[in-house]
Image (cartoon, rainbow, N blue to C red; front, side, top):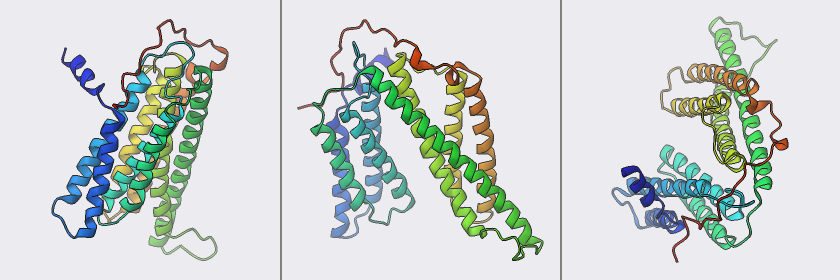
Length: 304
């Protein structure tokens, strides 16, 4: 009963909830111009977190709502505009947590609010069909996972070069005949690859979830390929967080070892995908899951 009550409460979330949160954050940031205000940064983080949470819940409810006939899930310009806005919100919060003294909010927040306004403006456009939605989300899934895999491999190579160059310097063998990039360059490349791979794989996993919802009406969490892909993303997210913990001593070596482990998780995920129907069956030849439910009203409509 408690679970149903919570779902009922969450179903009351509307665009107004997170849109208002983002507006409050913008006002709080504009108050910088009035001078130093105690607790302002904490309030910004708190309101931004509330906005992102309600934003994500709103989209999750839309993805899980029952659609009838050939209507796709998260397959409208409205949904995609809100997904872009959510990405901007998360990027802003991450960057703000790293450097709350900067004024990136003056650039991010207007763009974020504008994307929500665009979403509301195109809300009335017709949705894509389920077949079109599957194809679009499959493309996003493949692109995200492919780019993420590339970033993991580049990060692994940067880690290997870092350790080799470090060993050469310690043993005074870093001559001019065979030169490698500096340790600082390799460390930056390694860290950026971790961030890039985490973002790309996260997008790929999310796109895969929506693709399965459109295709079969469920995600298939127990599938080995899905489980290992989720595990890969979880590890990459943890590695990125660990990398950006400010521990200057041995930072480059730490990043190198993290990318080595990331390669191991990537190999496991690829084995899981290639040894299951997830990566072998041509889903385009399979029929869409039948939908006999009548078209249900949107459970998370914007309040007028």
